[in-house]
Each structure stands twice: as C-alpha cells, then as structure tokens.
Length: 255
Image (tube, rainbow, N blue to C red; front, side, top):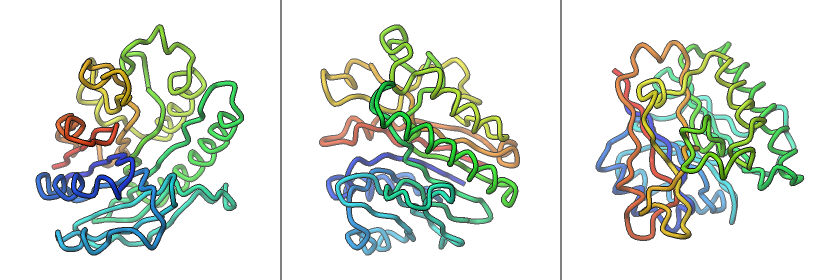
C-alpha cells in the first residue's frame, strides 16, 4: 500500500502535476494541502477520470486539504473538535482500507513573536487532542501532511541560521514530539535515521538547485502500521518540474 502527501501550493496551477503523479506512482492514498480553491471548484471529474476517489475541504486563496484514494473514503470528517469555530480549512480525515488517514496543513506561525505563533500553539494542542482520540478508535492510523516544523537540526540546511526561528524552534519541535509521544513514528526518519532529506525549498535564491531546504512534510504512523513499513521516499523530481510546488511529494510504502 502506498500512502503519500504533497503540499501542492494551488491545485488550479498544478493539477497536471497531480494527474501525472497519480498515473506514474498509482498511490493508494495521496493527500494534498494548500488547494487554494473554493469547495465547489475542486476538479473532482479530472481525478475520477484517472480512477480515483476524492474528498476535500476547500478554501479560496488559502489553505484547503484533500484526500485522493483508489477506494472510496469512509467516515469523512473535517476540522478539529477543539476549534469548532476555526474558519481555516486545514484538516480532513477518512478511513481507507481500514486505515485512518488524517491529512493536516499545520499552521505556519509566521514568526516566534507573531500573534500567529500563539494560534499555532493553540492549533497544535487541538490537533494533539484529536489525534489522541482517533488513535483510541483506530489502531491503524497515519497522520501526514505539511507540519511546518522541522523535527531536528538534520532537517534544516543551516541549523545555526535557523536556530530558534520559526519552523525550527524548541517550542515547535516540542509540539511535534507530543504527537510522536502518543505512539506515532516518523516513517522517513525510522528508515533513514542519518540521511539528509528535504521536502521544501524556498522559491527564492535558487534554493532547490543549491540543495538548501527543510524537511517539514511528514508521514507519522501508528505502531500497528510500523511492522509493515517497507520504504519511504521524497520525490525531488517533482520539485524540479516547470512551475512546481515549493514542496516535493513524500511517500511511505507498506507491505
């Protein structure tokens, strides 16, 4: 089973990229973040023509998340129960082949001293509560998406420059560790403990060409999924395409 995540940074712009990727890799599940389109603008027909099903939570200009799968998603839910009035479309969950999939586009936070950082703290606390509750119901669970947090210095091209800055602060890494402490495992780092692998590169200053990136897109898996984990990959070729997203797809393959 192939389960993948990709912050597509506008599905309107990069629908051909997604279509090509689905045809090439044939994932069982592909979750997308930053759709940047209204609920009624999702290109469902184009996805269905390729033999996939889709559920989504759209938002014009910003945010938006989707789950694309070969089999129909069940028990679909959106948002976080602890933040019922949050207008930002950042979470969608569904059960696929007995596996609970939680797709997240986590808050960026802007800067440590920004009011948006306080929102990020509140949002991650709500996410932690939600995942904890879901894990009690679904032994097989995958939490994946754009977390906007680097787990460790190995995941940052210049740890000194980014020390205690947004995406790399001790506080944020603590929030990510709280999720792992629920019984989740970072699938990529589990199989590649010492390898430098990035998933996001700034569009500016030729960062991708210079191999200066960060690993902020993750696939966290429950203990019941761990024994079947076979391989993980970051598809940097997708980042090298014309008019790419600034993120690369990340995929975990299970036996």
